[in-house]
Length: 153
Image (cartoon, rainbow, N blue to C red; front, top):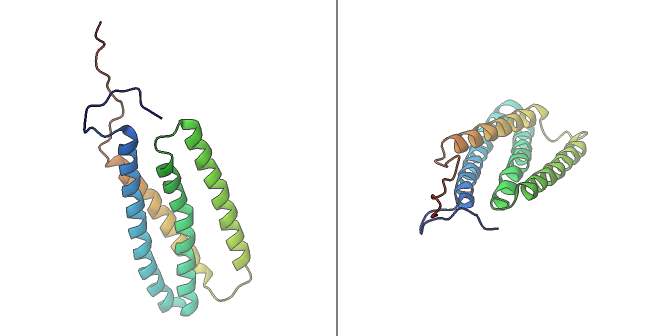
């Protein structure tokens, strides 16, 4: 899809600017979840032993699936129409909800993990991801409008 706004040589397109913001958000998400894996596993080990570590690891994994798919869906559709972007994001949301429900259903009767650590790491991972996405967007230097040159009448 091409933009109707003419760009000068070397000026990034809107889609490129959006991709840069989304890459930053994804990079920050991965750093957050890497740190949460270490800290969550340590806290889990100290509070509940091996079950706490498993709870933390499962929570981080679910947070990665839940938050990562949103950023990746937006990244893949940065230059697509609003309808296509909306359809992809909605489809990804439906798939990740089904996956999360299936994983939680499979884990329901299991005893090898600590439920409190799973819940804690999942909440910290998802809320931290939302905050990092917010920071990536608000700190971006992307214009709200694209000015067009005056017409040559």
